[in-house]
Length: 230
Image: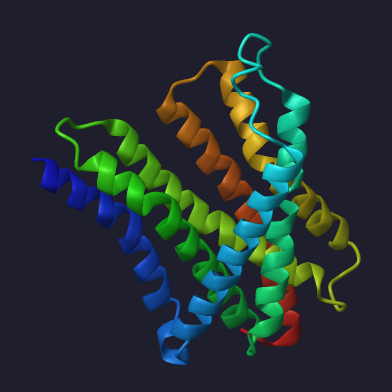
């Protein structure tokens, strides 16, 4: 039973990533090594973030347990996630090709590196346990949401770097980019305030991600059609 549960979790996490790579057409472009490069930039970015967090935001959870959540501290820590946007910009600059291939390669490569580094050990030591636990299924579903989120974020970074983007749409792109680093903190705070269960929290995350992705797709589609890069 534990092996069956572990296999289900692996399939639920990694199969959508493989399908995104396979059926998005990236395999036809030979973009595998470009995805590896994007993953390498992700690893370097996370190391830089860890260094900054360890230097300026040392772990003081044990000291602040009685004082509740330090929202300002968490806000400042979330600000460090701006480095992800810089890393995605670097990835896009290093990948040649048309808009859709650049965006998908950078997004899938970035998301794949994250899911491997953050979910592999979790599933290996957790999902193989003696007892079934729904939290691993929830983590797997959350990984699929993150795949959409990362592709969306890379698209926003690509749109931000375009000089031919409609000026009326620039504020929308900028607003979504500003929200992105703080999205996790905002959602976690909202879920904590509403005192919802994990499944409802997962649904809230998926709905918010879907809305942001839909708006981003609308902006990207308009620009892509105008440039004839579809």
